[in-house]
Length: 299
Image 1 (cartoon, one colour):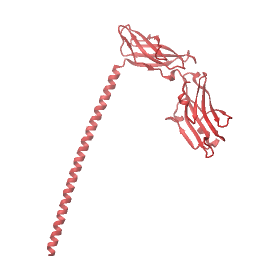
Image 2 (cartoon, rainbow, N blue to C red):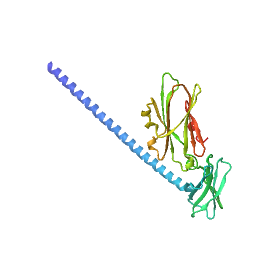
Image 3 (cartoon, helix red, strand yellow):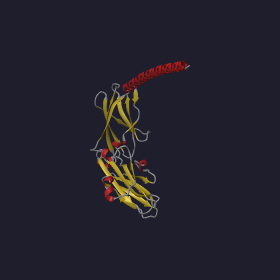
Image 4 (cartoon, rainbow, N blue to C red):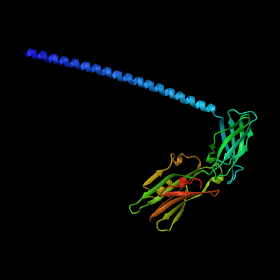
């Protein structure tokens, strides 16, 4: 009887091992099938990505080949420009041009009335024209060739930095709060201006105008230099710091930094900033409680 039980146990063990081996083999087969599918998917994905990249490159090459204007450069005339009129030389080259065509550059501040400036020929396909611009306006321009066939380029905007002041932009804002005050308990700001092309577009002075709930408004002139160098010595309790933009001041190139800070012992109604340029332009806007400084770039 015991021998029969022993045989039955052995038989069950063999069946169990066989079942496990079968399941193991099936699992391995399933894993191999999944890996094969994943490999095929990866290959198909890589192949598709390669074809898309190739098509994009071909499209870019076609667009480049279709460009009528192959190069263009703006050159501000720093000797003859004034704060009221900026003289800008524009040089460009055509990919191809009809022989004896009349070449012009047209520019406009309103998109309706176009000033037509005849271009000087530098070579067979290269030309130069002089534009006279007013800093308070924004201009579009286009190239024109007139012969047996009239042809015009797309309209483009003349980049602002060639004929407008370089904006003094906010780089850091510091402020603190107090349980006893609804508004800020202190406020600090840093601004940076890139060195402009023309000296008369430099910032002369920047002021922070503070309006209090109970009159006695105050104006603070910003100093040259970083506020972050003064925080420890001034012992301001700034609980919040906001870095504006993607670059810190140390990453900027040549230019000038302005900063100021103020501790408040009474409720603040509004904080504004006012930048005065050497040419008389005033750029101003609110900093707190709303921010409109950047909305009024060229008032």
